[in-house]
Image (spheres, rainbow, N blue to C red):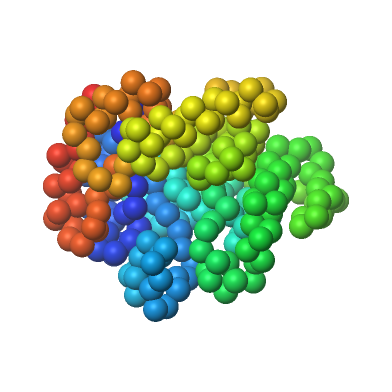
Length: 279
């Protein structure tokens, strides 16, 4: 089981000098991946289902990861997650391909359908259509990354007689990881993604993996995607016993999250204290 870190494009971790310090520290400590989340806007005043105060800073994930890519050499870079229906899929495909090229094939493109209706409404996307858009946008991006003659004739995306280069450094495009625990999200991971990212305790993840196994029997997984990788995000400090439970569940990658992201020194200590969990 590999060890990664999530969330360091926000709050006290977001300034460039702090990012440089923490990214180099994480790579030196042996973390294998660095993941960041996204909110374009947040409800103001804050609502109960909102993960952050609207005044908390959070950087765009792809811009932030381009900066981290320039500071590091080995650590893999993940969006955990981009809210896909809020993005133009052709523009995002270009951005992801560019970042994958500049980082030497280190990008994981983690995506989700989103859950904050005020945010989605503010960017002009009907909330009820977010799942269908997510599926179609993924298909459109894969066309642009892989097809000799990219074409799409969907409900939300239509194009032909176009092309986009450079293609990603990774064969077939950046590795796609789907977040979410609904049946729709799990099916999306099985049919369109290289991996799935789940949030919760080992017990919660075990229940999700049982559902994932049940749904896998109903879906045809494209051979090009290979075995489904499992990434677990833990929002609490993790001890060795908890890490071992995740490993026993077959988790490929455990992401720790240095909440509350209030002090750079505390974040650095958190990274140092958790560095040995996956060794």
